[in-house]
Length: 76
Figure: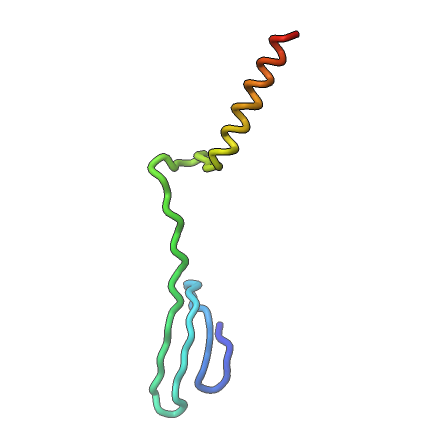
């Protein structure tokens, strides 16, 4: 699929890769540049299906909430 006028196009290949193309009509001279795919985020050595990353402060809040709940239930 392409869009553009005579000599200039932007498009997507059959494999889904985006490109920009510029050419001189009737000369056979053209230039095409492909966009680089997005770099995947680095995975940690623990990453596996079901492994979730969350901020350390959230873990601290959860631990404190559990400790407070245990203390409150023992006081009754």
